[in-house]
Length: 303
Image 1 (cartoon, rainbow, N blue to C red):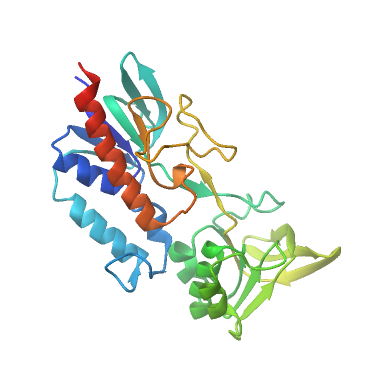
Image 2: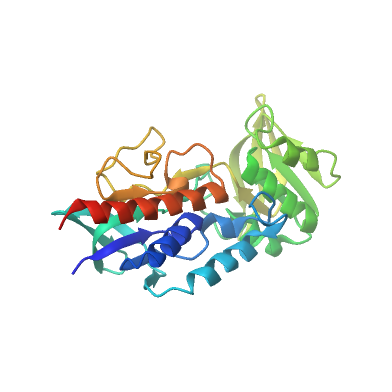
């Protein structure tokens, strides 16, 4: 017997969708590699209604505690690898070789870090190259590090590392920082932070661990000695698991105002979608809409 709903993803969108679906007494399963998603990577969250300041991990803990009040099937530690039509229903294949049948699906699988794709990055991943300052920052206390990027995630990472590192290079390919002005203003003038705009990383080098990187600034190659590199140059949507929906040129799933995709019965929410503003509160709101839309779909589809 197929479930009413399978939710793919355990970030703010997926968690909120699960809360709403459980309250509607839908039979459901949540498939998530981990609970929290990108929200867990944030240091201070200052724009989530109801909390003037809360850390990402603290907010995720509150989400998780709320979710634990309801009974449903939780598949944590596995990933959905394929979503496909199975007659009038869907089949969701999992990384552990199992599969779930469902009448409707919400894809809230979020995004993953975009790599630099430069020599040395793959070799030193986990040995000085990292993609989450919240997760790995404490490992580099008292060391010289680089944060790569100029958007909000890079600025947030630089602010985190400024508190614990000896020195922070903020290496930005663009001529100027593109993150929110309020975050940029916090960085400017900090003695431990050096902002390097119009700088392109050409190579990461080291021995057992990262020892430095090379940058190209206006055709001049410069080597920086450091021990840690945090790559914050954007994210790629985890949308390859489904082919029966419309996507934009970035691979983001296109949805309407009710979180419906081009495939009836298939909904999407959060950063995996083409919704322009990637914010925790927006992902949570879209997760709620997706669950309510799935409920309406089930009540009107017949059979």
